[in-house]
Image (cartoon, rainbow, N blue to C red; front, side, top):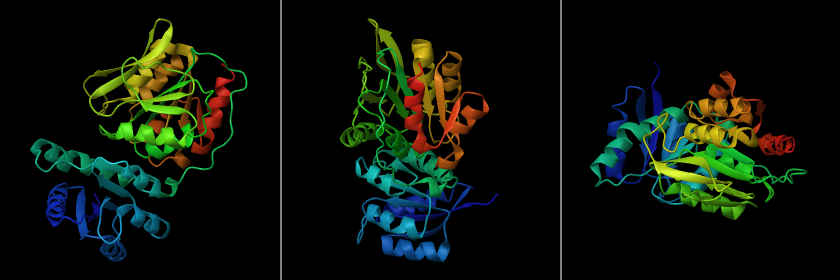
Length: 342
């Protein structure tokens, strides 16, 4: 099996050496070069032609984000950002990075070991399969409005993983304040979901917030499941939809899990729901989306041509969970079209 050739860009020589030593322990990965700043990285890309680059956001001489903006148009390359808890990671994703992983505390041995032996190698392997041509900025906001729906019992559920931060934005930015309540699971580390929600809230017409138990699912509002160790479910109390966020074991390797959310939507909302599965590696959400379809919900899957990683939508499509496959730019419009028939 061909190894994934990796370029590590990290200005701390101690942390850089730690990354190299541990990545080289993975039989599927080999570090072909290192760099401490973007200028060294550019030269290494030309010389070694790596399959994937890991990139620190904070670098000398030029920030990682500025480097990405200059690099991607000339040398498209799958990039995994290693970031401390900062909303700058979303600038990096917008600039073309495939995914990110939270930088661990070196003093926390358990956290560091998980990062080195599991989180980073997995992200690199996923990134190596990404379609770089599909990583691009979202298009201009389209004016789309509901024409006939006025039903507080409708709910829209969205699930995504790798490439999902930009994909979700691409969809949600086209939602008006008339959209039924929206619930979202995006695989993301704890802390980042709150920043992501605030970022969307600033850029979209709908209200966006990180969910907490008891939050009502309201028209014109998007609730994003908190990253960490809690699953988010849709429940109905007092005749209205709410979300419930409770601790639980990982499902399909994830917490929160798209399957857990979709299953709850199928059980709670039935045919008054619409499910959307977007770009991501693995199968999380496929079975849940099938349950939604069997319960009478309408379902949409992002098509292969626009996915960064055509994993979750493919599995969902293959098992019959997807009623309509759409390009990312058409998902919001299709959502409105289907809601108008419900």
